[in-house]
Length: 194
Image (cartoon, helix red, strand yellow):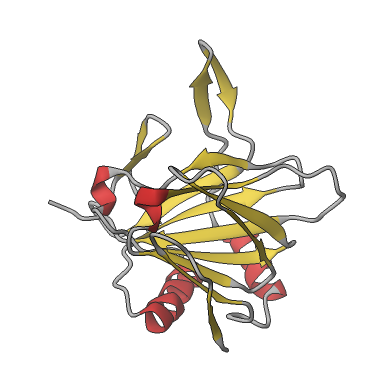
């Protein structure tokens, strides 16, 4: 399991392409045991469903606000708790929460954003574990518009964004018209609890 350092202005980006090798059973377990929800967001005065299923999981007290909604943590399931320990061992970062995203097809996506909410602190570490179909992650620098990076997040890969990455970059998982299978992404992080 070799870590690749991806050159990045104003931030830190690491990729383990083969972090997990036997993923089919893990994917099936997460599909079955995670209490997936269809969240809604308000856009242009209308309430619309997010283009993916989600679950916020974490230690007690690790509430998180994103897309204008405050989320109390669901308790850790056994499979997610085990994955968290593996990610902590690899990154050396004490992670106490995770946002799980379930992309059912290429039509499910995540728009441009940065994980820069106050409860994550000024230089959060976001450890993104991908299972299932490969999807492309786009990164764009906030002030140097010509700087963009594309990373393919393959089955079993772990991407870590750390340091000042969230302050200077935004990222997304774009839609694709290609026929692709399901993908589950777990973005582990540390919530600073007062």
